[in-house]
Image (tube, rainbow, N blue to C red):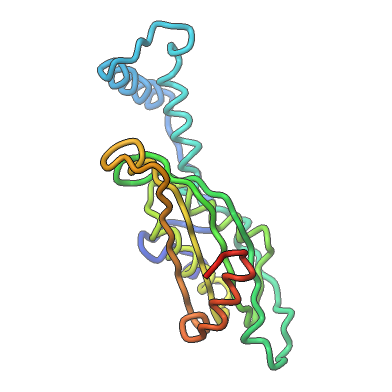
Length: 216
């Protein structure tokens, strides 16, 4: 498989090839110092047993939460299709979900979290079921927005498998609307992305929602 097919459509970041990030010890100390200054200015007492290492933990937590920028080499593996030209090949769906995900909004760096449902109609290749979960979390573990995650999942599956169609449904709660701004209490943002057969076939879309246990 050409590596070019495994690059992000929008930002050209690696999808499958491992690109480990590196932060030196001096950089870690500097970043932790910045966070200590910020937390102190915001009112945190940084001289208690519970908070003395909070700046360090915060920076490390951000590092872990954005691991998606490093790619995932296990996404390179695809297999030959199980469909051998039968009449229903363009209708048979592979669906996975709900896939829990957690992300950081690039607008406020506050979390949003939810569930993803991913489906595709295989053509010549299929991907291991666990790889659909890996794909969702790869894009969620970045500074991003919900709409982009869905678009990237759909585009990457198209590039990897050249399927007859791809369906992605995301529902998420955004802390930026709950902790600040309008301070909503129970908001859920829903986004859908249809490619190929799903775009033109309403019955396939309905079948996808029913299979996911979603009312439509």
